[in-house]
Amino acid sequence: MAARKGFVSEINVTPFVDVMMVLLIIFMVTAPMMDSGLDVDLPQAKQVDNLPTDSNHLVLTVKDDGTLFLDTYQVQLEELEERLTALVKEKDRALFLQADKSVSYGLVVDVMGRIKAAGIEKLGVVAMPAAETPAPAAAAPAAGKKTRR
Image (tube, rainbow, N blue to C red; front, side, top):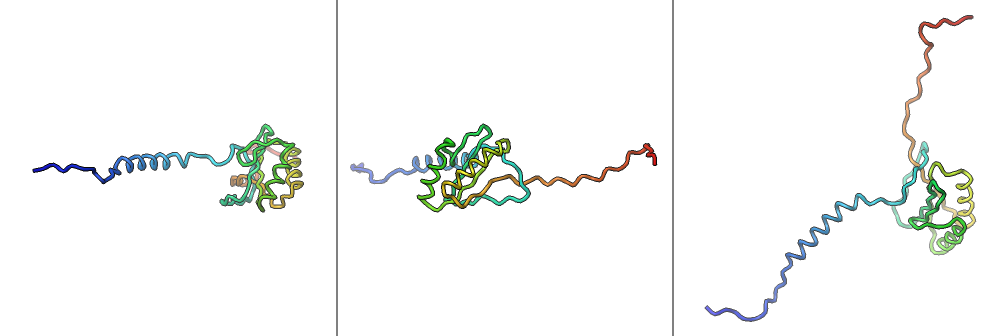
């Protein structure tokens, strides 16, 4: 038998498929661990709506130390109005304000005033749903105690 001489015109795709499968598994394992947003201890409210899932909104975060983040980028209080004005001109976007529950009321009001001054009319406030707590039972009189009339 004579050996065939020449080039092999086939591509071995097995290593490529193996690498892609490993990358897919890594992505599937790490995707649920990714946090969206910043870590803030939100106040609780009785009725809370969910944030929309579209990407056409912005989230302004006020952390407990008073630092501001527009989405994930830190912004100074003095330049907040300027940044928001530029973003309003870009698109008609909604802004959601999430503030840590330990942030002073005065700072939250100041930030909200700057948001309104920037021309943003669609403002939402983010909160956690309140935990359902049972109503306290009426206090029964203590046994063994007599009351005077």
